[in-house]
Image (cartoon, rainbow, N blue to C red; front, top):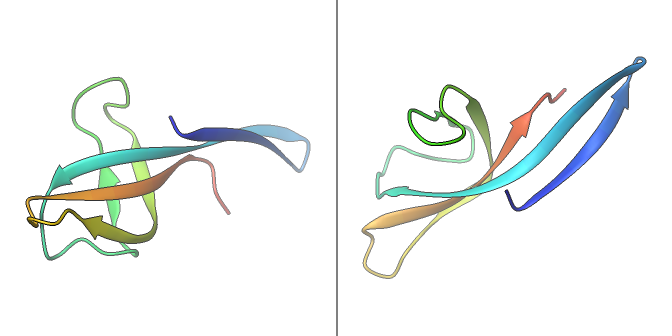
Length: 72
């Protein structure tokens, strides 16, 4: 996890974290997409993409910053 913070919303505590992931290069992933994690410690969670995914120089993978947790 890159960073995390806690937010207080209407009396309830919400944990929000920023996660950096790498996936195989795809043209159809953009800043409005969401990613459902299928394996690893975040399996089953849905991540919201923050900003535009960044391809590597060879365009073989994308670096993506995502937010995990409750968002309004």
